[in-house]
Length: 327
Ligand code: PBG
Ligand code: ZN
Image 1: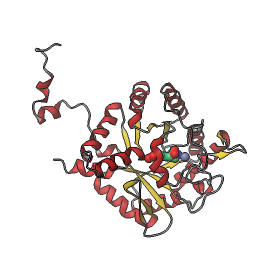
Image 2: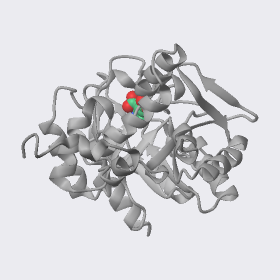
Image 3: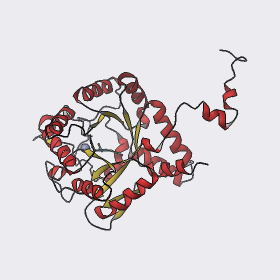
């Protein structure tokens, strides 16, 4: 395979042949849209560090889902801003917690719409950590599992179609799987945040979800950005415990991990295109420094090329519009 016998440009001569040999594509059915829900009514509050992303009160959800359906976006992932917070994040597993109410509101208006929930405690604890603290402020693993299980069960009882634990406690997938099976929810899938890194890219999300830890950081439970082999072990564990879909988060700085996990496990993989990745693109685009549509679509294709089957992204609505109005 040498020049001049091989001329790669032959297959780039026009858009028809380029499309015929294209290896990867992006479809609206790859996308999951994150929603932030909060108490109150008539609220549609824009997150300052995430232009175009809103915290919505429950009464807004019917319209929001109707819009997502029109755009062809198949699923949402819900995050909640509770009425109140306490040491063990009890609103996270309350029957009438904000996410539980949001699930019911969505299902009442759109029974067939696919609802995924983020399962964690950091939005509900007064200290902002993802689990129960001991006297020294260490997040205790095993006692947290019981609370996470309660969160997941309460979501599924309220009608959630899938749960996505994002806490990074050891053993949480097994604990949740057992609890769901015991209640007859054996067909409810678990999407595990398997390779979730202690990342600076979550900053804007913590504004949106009001979940900044009051002290310290999450490095004792989320992964070290320097590690790739560890992602294999985390993911092997989640799969062994019953995860149906595994996730890499953040996405952009961890594309090598996406590809490695795809090759190693051949499991459905989700890339979480996180808040900081979104904020950077929005800021540069607002300044006229980049072409937002080109950059976003290129980034999404990058995730697909790296092995992602699903993509959680705040750009989902814009992408859907761009895919519909092809030019
Ligand atoms: C909760 C959670 C976080 C994100 C998703 N679920 C924040 C965190 O772990 O601090 C981040 C999502 C984003 O940045 O878009 N544990
Ligand atoms: Zn958390």
